[in-house]
Length: 432
Image (cartoon, rainbow, N blue to C red):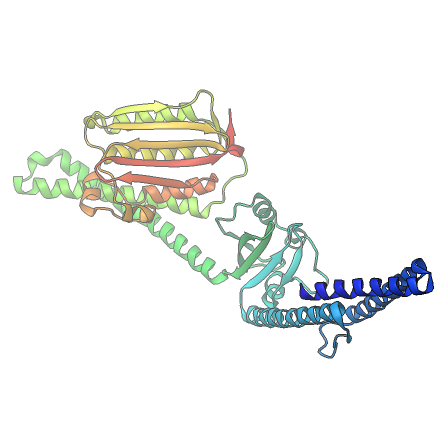
């Protein structure tokens, strides 16, 4: 502020001096004109010096500012200080970027930055090995042009990145890659890709093992169960002390058969790709079938069922799988709801699709159990599960079926008050 005040004082002093000189010679206007031209010429000269100096590379340390007095000296010094600060900040950012590039180059995981136009901005060295992308030829190329898999294009454009995508590596058979995309900035994307071939093989071996063992166990369990049922039908011919062991063996063989059946269902869902052809499933009709079936197998409990479904709502999917998932939820509610309790089976349309919920007023579940309920064989209370005859696989089956229908299971529960199991299907799967 003081520099501007001093400059104004100098300007006014120059004008005053020119007026006095003009009055002495009788040419005030001419004197003012000469003074104005001289002042303007001086400022233009300083502006030219500033322009030439700024045009130089500000990142070079030898770009000293021009010498100047008054306000121009202050301007030169201020810009020079800003240049120094900018150089320091630029060097700092460059150092961070170099370290980030060095560290990312050491990663076995591919890291790819994609701009809002969907083209490649930057990638690390592992990307070239995993995806075959080459610098600089592929820079600013659309990522969907370089990874030509319909599943990847669908995953990329739908922007539902809460789940990862596994596909075969482009141009390399036998290698499985896992893609994870995160949004940041102005709709830019960070894509992480890792080689999960070994993990995929182990999971496949595990699924095959479970499927094969379950299949092999089916026949002997069926034989054992058949003989035990025959024996149970003729208990009168056995000593009374054998009645209870025989009944327990028959009950446990039935439970074992149920476990094997559910393992086979789960293995089939995991190993079989979701079919592209979708059936039109009437939700109201499906709900009535599930209600009737549940009331039949749970008739001794005399539950009160409330079914609330909108008219003529059709869901696109596999009817058998949807029946299995929703009936599992309803039967689960019936198992853990006391006699004469209430079970509500409802659906609600909204702008995003349809939400199906199963609500009961049963025992409820403590909050720390909820995240693990869809794990195989996880038991909230082993004794309670044994009494109900559950296999511990029902909710795992539900989880996988819902994932194949672009949905997921949401659980709310309060101990002693009941539970709500709900799932939301996107509008792309709803016809109404």
